[in-house]
Length: 431
Image (cartoon, rainbow, N blue to C red; front, side, top):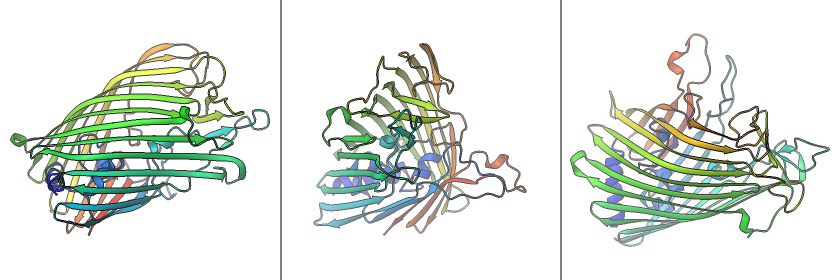
């Protein structure tokens, strides 16, 4: 079980404060897990379930949407809680099998292409009905550790048919997301470990089901990471590469990235820093619009997936620099985290004669073409903005609870009971 031994050693170095990560930990210290080894990486590379045997994971939900601010005296349950577990069986000294399942997790890299509303009759209901909310939301994993190699397979299913997002029973309500990916984690030597994953997905929505194997609606993606040990800093050099070719009714996106990162462990703490460049090219048909910050997809006939006329396009080239740091303070069971990211990209927008395309950066529409620079939000409270801050609690190296602290919490009046204090709470348990 060399791969397992190497990965545990890598996790001990990469996350010496908290051997297992969560969405809240990642969100608090850098906003992404591109350059760190953590249990959340099982959704990028399913072979990593072999690195976390007999392990439970989940979260209570989040307050991450810009409209999630809570008024004084009001309350609201957090969004999108989920839970799951990994179970392993050792079949010999060098080999093991693993199985895992996660319930109710929303794969935003797929569901992010789903519109807020779907129009099927432009005369009777020009703004349509709300898109169905998927009810299944299931992740299933199978994995095996064989000698110095780990392998894994993952399937994700999110489906709803017959019930609109407004709660109406409708034969035209339909949304379906299906993903299948494979991965491997290989120990090349005592100082090098490589991760490779590839996958495909199919995303459909609208007034009727389409054929399962529709070439124009299939997406493809892949990721590569290499962990190279650097003894001088008690850490790793981490080159990464990624590729995503995504397709949805009336939409397509090509994204390619290449980056380099480094991590280092120090006394009761851990630090990482990374830079990733990317190229992104998006298209959206004329039947994609936005109105009052809602995306609207018009589907009124088979084959009418892109609408008529020229297709708006948006391409971007740029990079994201990000970092994260965490350290135990006061007690061994308490940790503080902070991190951030900054994206700068050059963009070129072609309107294609569509004034209110979803690719337009303005809520009031774009009537012409243009070039401009873009960056991520500075402080809107979402998981993609500039900075993050969080805390962690470790109970006997078994139960670990992580929380993302609301970014404006220290600027509030504590005597008025303003807003929310925490934007996400995640937890893991190892047994």
